[in-house]
Image: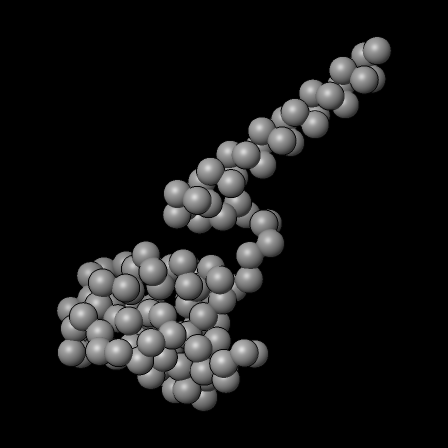
Length: 123
């Protein structure tokens, strides 16, 4: 009986934590560490959160909100060709960008996302 109750408690705790994780992800919060979440997906979320006010961060090559802020789709070939330049570039504010601090992993995620925009459609 005690073993059954322990297993039931563990299952309920796991289900509860899974429901909380789903709720926080839907609210736009970062995913639970260790969740299945590719770097490019994380980068897309970070770009939406930090970059979208000035850049077009999606697949569109339309004009960005600011003339000096190129759309990510236009940056993609350059990021793919020279990621080290952009790693350094993202360690400090640029242009009239508000000051943000991205971790190395977050920088890698943003670059993975931008590079993914360089891939042909359907891949």
